[in-house]
Length: 377
Image (cartoon, rainbow, N blue to C red; front, side, top):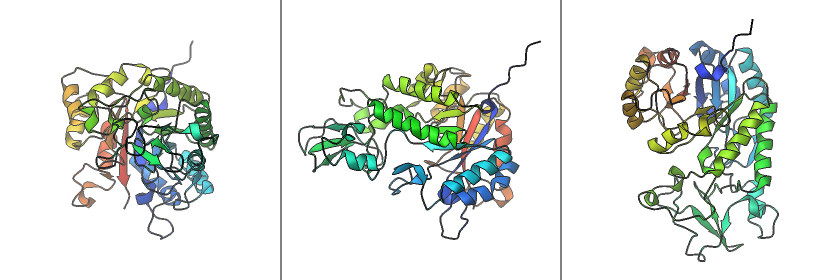
């Protein structure tokens, strides 16, 4: 008699995002830390969650609250150290809670040693680790791409030292890595191995759709020229990079998981669901836009509908057009409102959300995952 086939843990998991800075402060310095998370793991276990996703805790100048990474293998002193991470993972596993690390593959901090070397000289070996272009001189960037989090700003910054522009799809302090360079790919794979070897159960991969780019760097056409380029960036080269990440994760025991943030428009996200991005050889789950209206979200779940994480997506799914194609639902995340962990009668006045326990139980009714960012205090 053949052994029964068991589904991977993440197919029915509730994954809870923890933003360490605001979750719980263990040492009284006013900033949450990894030890604070560890001390409240029993509360998270009581909620019934299956895994936590830790927002970035890497060494960082904090221009973008940790998404500007200066060292992928170190914990920022604000949050503790590697020993604190190891204790957190050990205690979480003892409670049956898995731990996901936030991987930031698209860019680094401008203070990362890689970029410091890259901008030092056109001849530096790290020059090609980032995206540099001539443009039309210091007043004319290579194209019209806009950067995110910059009010109307360019996705390019001129460097006086080497007289070229560097690409940053986000802040100028977050230069884009060049994933066309095999050395960059190897370096980021080593980062993944570093955390997997320390016991991480997988990654939430930040803006993974941004790492592949059109090598011609064409101008964005309207209406996309009016919004940050990261909102529409999608290139076939990304798929092979993601497949390689998947092969790496699959080489580890314990059903490690990759959850991709593909923050594209609804139509683009649905296109992803019907391609290998969320198939057998790429990402396991998707974490895109957060749902804004919790009561509608819960109603859809109770009706047995899959949930896409935007208002338009909810309406489309109610019509059945994309039924059973969305692999994950997001209640809230670091870019949006958080979910209160307390019981409804103890909830803060401005919360307006269902308590986490109700959301957790609702998501148990369907085979998918919820990513919910909560605040402890």
